[in-house]
Length: 443
Image 1 (cartoon, rainbow, N blue to C red):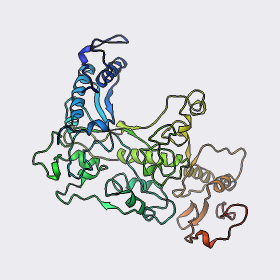
Image 2 (tube, helix red, strand yellow):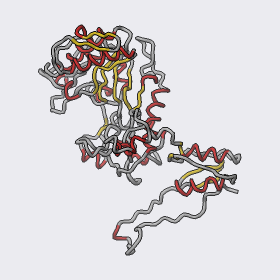
Image 3 (tube, one colour):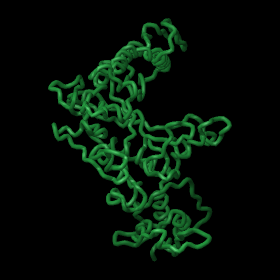
């Protein structure tokens, strides 16, 4: 209660561009949020969030089945509604690990849909989620399990198969040791056949079904206040760091100044703008093409207009991140979630396709991964010559197939060596790769 405070909507008044407050002089959460709600009213905002990802609060219980912070958020939602009026869309942005329920790892077997009082509250218009779920379990080399699913961790079809599948849907890792060995435990509700209860990725199942709490693992006969399909889902944030294997763990970020700084699982820490782009393309593409419609309100489960990508920085690029004398977080841009400065990059396949088509060749470029920041053809030249620098840089060849010309990287060799089988030179790299000139189009 001391964290939230006692401020009320009636204690705020708006006069032109000014906000006045007549309540107690307390620096508490309710005053903070309601002051911003008043500012949103001045700005004519069409939506407002009463908070975001306060997981450490919403999961605290004062008894076996009571969550005081959820009650406080419900009260705050009512006050925000009173201040903003009926036309402003209102919600709370839950963490992707928080929205669906509380399953404490204490051996109790408890399953509580602890946020359902908030999601079902009349002042709340939607279930809002910051959606940073993994879309891959990729490792280096070809010995890992997902290598059987795809040639590359950047492959759109592979990533799309994990939007409602893979980790957090079909299976989970019970321990760090299991993750290391890729020993996957299937997500199955053997007691009641409600697998979706334990699948944090199963938005569809959670949204479409009645929710029954399970104190001590025993399913309650009566459902919670949540009415299936009653409100749309907003993805208030989704995105991926621009770092190697970012889709393995898109919720983490690299910031040497933060105690939470971390690389995604099995990342080498190198910059990778492509995985960020592919993650966002997958997330938007998957839910944009979804045709699930509510039988209650008649709209989409997820409206594409309610998918919001993190993050676009209002600071001007390239001044940010370049001007370290002005902003202290510029170094974080390189591996971070920022789209600023990356949106103009062109997919390698698109560039190669355009160059091939300029010579009348309709080529298959589906196997090409990469982004091109810019490409200049400074004089008339054959497509072969125009493609040669790209081929050398990205390591792809043109192959004549029955279906036509296909651009692709050579398949990696299956041979493996360890250090005891190699004779290392005193200077130079331990491994060198030599490629013949295979960049030209077939005659």
